[in-house]
Image (cartoon, rainbow, N blue to C red; front, side):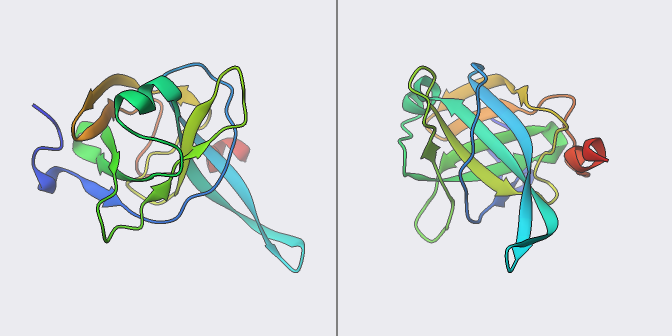
Length: 155
C-alpha cells in the first residue's frame, strides 16, 4: 500500500525551480544547496533549497521528460516523498536536464521549508518505487524534515 493513498498523510510542495549540477550515479539523490541572495550585485545573505536529482532511466520509467513540471508530495510521518506530474492549476517544478554527456540526470529544486527534507551532504534515496502515481521513495536517515542541516554544517 502506498504512503500516498490517503491525502491526509502528505503535504504537496508547490513552487518554482532552478538549475544545478550533480555527479553521483545513484538512481535518486537528495542534496541541500546554498544559494547567494544578491542586491545590487552584493551578496546580502543565503537561501537554501532541496535538490532532487534522478537518472534519465528512472525518469523515463516514470514517464517524466525534461521541461515537464512535477510536484513533490511529502509524508513526514512515513519519512517518504513522491515526485509526480503536476496537475493543471499547480505551478510545480520544472525538470531540468544536466549538461553531462556521460551521466545525464533530471533535477529540480524546492525552496527549503518544513516539511521539505534537508541533508548536510548529498545522499542517495532508497526504497524507490515507480507507479502510475509517480516515483515514491524513502528519504535518507541522515535527512531532517524540521531543520536545515546544511546551514548547520556550513557553520
